[in-house]
Image (cartoon, rainbow, N blue to C red; front, side, top):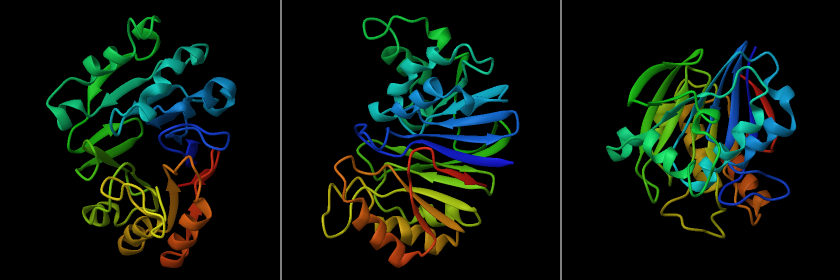
Amino acid sequence: MTDVIILGGGGWIPTAERATCSALVRSGERAVLIDAGTGIERLVSDPSLLDGVSELDLVFTHFHLDHVVGLGYLPGTRAIASTPPRVWGPAQMLFDSSSEEILRRFAGPPFYDADFGLIASEVSELVEGEQAIGPFTLSTRIQTGHSTPTLALRFDDLLTYCTDTSYDEGNVAFATGSRVLMHEAWYSEDAPDVPEIHSSGREAATVARDAGVEQLVLIHLHPCGNHDAVFAEASATFARTVLGEDFLQVEL
């Protein structure tokens, strides 16, 4: 069985309800983490989430703190044979830089003292287009509608993951044919919040509807709430919408 488990469905700062962005996509003995927000703590407090996993990869959509801070938690999973993961970053694609250099800057002295080898077995660069990562063919697409560019990710025809972006019509074609879309929904349109760099619930649902996916899961939710309004406007546009909750498991 292939499924995705939300480890952190929130953005910016963690709350009692939601950690910041991370999701675990599992297929048999192999798994891929999407981002390393505070949701990585779930793997430390509940090691059963990685039961049976022998190979683990970690893919980053971008390097904002709410998506990378969980790197510092990964040594807490070192008793599990599948860790540390192979890490894949977008620095070369987005910034003509090195993902390993950026991550070592964060996960190294004077901010962090654990050996980097406890965090990542190796760091490789993502490429625009397709590449094999874990058991999946991963496709990437650059999203320019954020304060820095970010990546949309697609895992075969199973899952498309779009976070930290304003409405991006190009994600419609990118997600077409995908079974599940996980898309950020930062605000409701009656209470806009930095719409130039984030998406509303209605905009997330518009992508889902126009792409013809089977299900929409709203993620990267605002820590200050208004989630009922976000869900209401999204589900009015696309009925098969689910509000992302930590530990929500979706079969792919």
